[in-house]
Amino acid sequence: MARPYKRVLLKLSGEALEGPGGAVDPQTLDRVAQEVITARQAGAQIAIVIGGGNLFRGLTGAASGMDRTAADTMGMLATVMNCVALQDAFVRAGQAAPVLSAIPVMQVCDPFTRRGAVASLEAGEVVLLAGGTGNPYFTTDTAAALRALEIGAEALLKATKVDGIYDKDPVVHADAKRFAEITYHEVIERQLKVMDLTAVTLCRDNALPLVVFKMTDGGNIGRVLAGEDVGSRVIEANS
Image 1 (cartoon, rainbow, N blue to C red):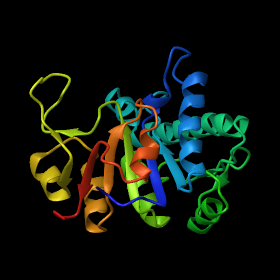
Image 2 (image 1 turned 180 degrees about the horizontal axis):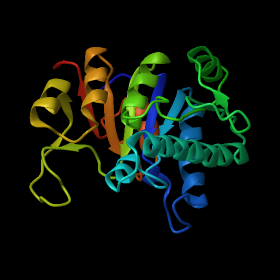
Image 3 (image 1 turned 120 degrees about the horizontal axis):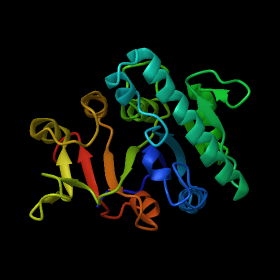
């Protein structure tokens, strides 16, 4: 069993905000916010990076003929929109949640600084980190790994639609095997689609644990933070 975590970075896909209400579903926003608030009230410090794929995906735009830099910039701006939407859900629930962006959008959110993010976490705020890394050609997975290291997170939590990391797609293969724990070396060697290679390497090189778990199972964020055996844990080397 992993030890409890006090400060974490939670990586959400943009698709995690989808629901019957559309690409950004108010009920889904409220549910995600409440899950995070419950975990924060238990004493954890939580920062969040959200993807933008529910609104616009840079790689898709580039594949359709757009300039890659322009497409990735649109994707990064989509993450700002998602963070503002989730911020609204937090504020309505009584939880302070500043949005800090790698891309300056001064009338909407504050610029990201490491000191500012840490100060907000220590003040009991949930910090929403928008704009990816602020650079094209980098995914929000890489942004999540980078920000986790910058703020001194004890783990990177990646919420997904499945309950962990499998040796093959569990949706397609009924005999897929789930890993309770696996090393970064094995993830790279097996070419498992956990995060992009840049993010995986960044986590590995800095010995940052990664926990992959199913977001739609209520209470899972709190269980992971408490050190329960939820999902799959990726570590630097076998413990």
